[in-house]
Length: 311
Image (cartoon, rainbow, N blue to C red; front, side, top):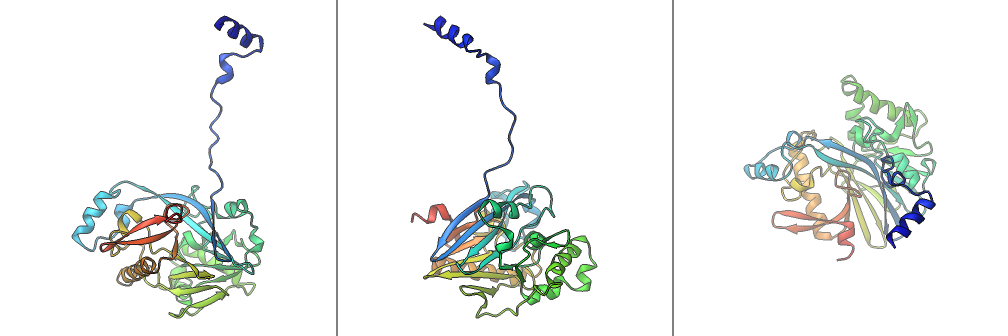
């Protein structure tokens, strides 16, 4: 029987070399994830990942934080997600942050490609809202001085705009100059419109508001989308290292411009999300970065969307 099978295989021209390994294909599936929020559609968009030296970035305000750091990646670069989010209200399309557009290397800069893979065109975006003006959040607004979202209005808290676009900041280096050039692409055509932050919220479009969460930067803002009693809050950089900062909310980052303000801003946001049970969308939590919080002693458990949706 075996001899007959071998003979048949040879007759069909099958040889061992036919099963040689093919070339590695590289790349991943499209980096987007869809969530229905009442009548709104929220799409998470991956900008890619970047290894971060978290032991050098995380601050240590208390002795127990050292234990947390030792438990979670101390001395080991941590592959960190960079996420952006698209809100389709049915009437308007709002993009929350734009990724880095490759400012920090080839592993980032995928928001535009993933937005298209998710079924949208850059020309459809009505509003681009920026949580804060660090390069990994505003870098994708323009490429080579040309607006990436040609029909959109660019929105950011005025405190952040005044700080990052000041002559002093722009003079500090290429990063600040690149941010200023991105803003100029919108300002030159009258589509850069900073807003005055308010604790009551600033309406961007019906159903989407901005709320101040100052500390990480002078004008760091959260954005909230609400539809039919469902809510999601987009946190920007209120979280960088989930394994440390959820159990230890007081831990701040060396990126924080005002750590004394950043820590309570984080703690307030975490407590509210756990108490009220709404979704949060986080730039630097593993893609898609959407989930809910559950109180656990003085800290919190993170329940990713594919976990919490079934509970």
